[in-house]
Amino acid sequence: MMSRLFLMSAVVLGLVLPLPAWAQEVATTVDEIVVTARRTDAPVWEVTRGDSTLILVGAISGVPRDVEWRPEALEAATRRSQRILFPQEGRASVTDVLRLIWRIRTIATLPRGTTTADYLSPEVQARLETEMADQKNDSWRTNSLMILSMDLMSDHAGYERGRTRNATDVIKKVAREARIPLRPVGTVRGDEIVDSLITAPPATYATCVERALAAAEVGPEGAAMRIADWRARRVPAVMAQPLEQALGLCWPWGDPEIAPLLRRQWAEAVQTALGEPGVTMAVAQLRVLAEPDGVLDTLRAQGYEIEGPEWKAAVAEAAAP
Image 1: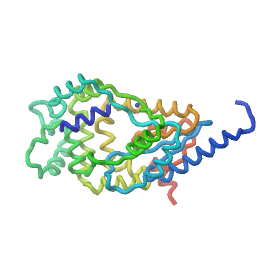
Image 2: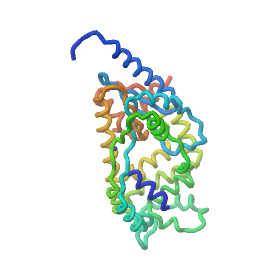
Image 3: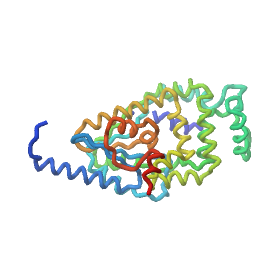
Image 4: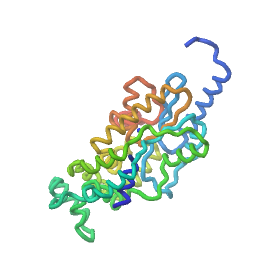
């Protein structure tokens, strides 16, 4: 339990002239980077404005190291990008960590004298009783809904939290080796993270538990299908998976204070990148890009041409042969 809490705290966004030869070379390089990026298993989108090209890589978490996917093309495209954007950094002080430890009971358990039945509907509680019937004791009844949802996802739904190899990890490693400028799209202060964990009412994560329970009922097969859909670039299918929906509703993405900050930082970073010449690669959680009113919806509404897999279910079905 302690390690999970520390992991969360770390989360804490012209003139018309003949085109000169050097510009032609840059244009060719951009095309090569984009084509190379598309060869990876991850869903990739390209957005262009003038001499600015933004490559958006939709990443998902929890991809085990033994799952075979093709990161080589992503590595090659990373080496030829001018700059890399990656998710937010959490910046915690020693005081923040000590405060987290001091208040761990508040974060990890429900208020004294209450159980999950006080915050979940009778129907959801009954399903939860069935799912947890094989537990050695009833301590889960008094776990905070945030901790309970994490346990449901990792212990029952097959979500990997240990040794994983995600697109974010691949890109950051290559960029550092190649000395390509890396910058997070924003930061979240440690005191903001701790405050969100301490002050959120217990019922904040009731919906998170419902979706995590749905993922647990599907079992590890659902987690495996989520990864298979991601590798096949079936973005609407990934977004429809109960496990992906649970991750989008649980901490930090379900936090009423932190989540809007994370989304706003991504929106601002994308607009900044589209004003910088050359190629910017941005690796973001798929849900940030493909959710309703997310980055891709916003760019499309602003009139940008977006090349890449369809991310909306209705449109994807209409486009299918």
